[in-house]
Length: 248
Image (cartoon, rainbow, N blue to C red):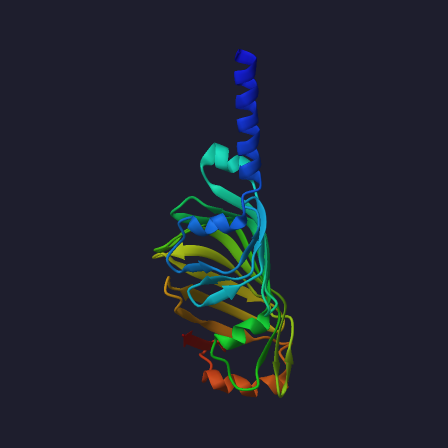
């Protein structure tokens, strides 16, 4: 009798494991999500699949692919997955994303996007093009519905350049450290080269509003034809620095 019981229990266990392993990814729709996070069509299984589109506040990404690290469900009661996300505007991201029901975490994450993506959200003078690639490196980040809880990362502007009708500025040193402040995100950056020196502070509120301020100073290698457009920022101070401030 006990052999039949064990055999029956084994069959039930195999059936349950099979159901879990092959559970459709659409079951993720019943998981608790932050109020501002919505997802589109879902394909695959809960362990490995793809979401056609993800919307958070006013931002849209997709497709997003994932591969769940199932052992984290057993050891930490956390949904954690390796992700690969793309978007039509050229954004690409890879990293480890986790969700425990109240907080979203990111680790070992790299997000890259064309710098031109900023032109739609940052006030720029007419006929000015931002060139290069923006790299967002997140070593450890925790976000809740109320905003940023923990953040250790860096923002880098690779092959940074500005193109204006009167010329092109290369060799722009640009990187910044990231942190949380009042549940928003702040970036503090500075750099110096023969072309340009600068220092800036950028803050983004939980609602998505931003403010950026700082200064820049032309160096000895700064192209002479490009000095005239600096007048758009006003007159330099007694140290030759042009100050700027934008909000949006």
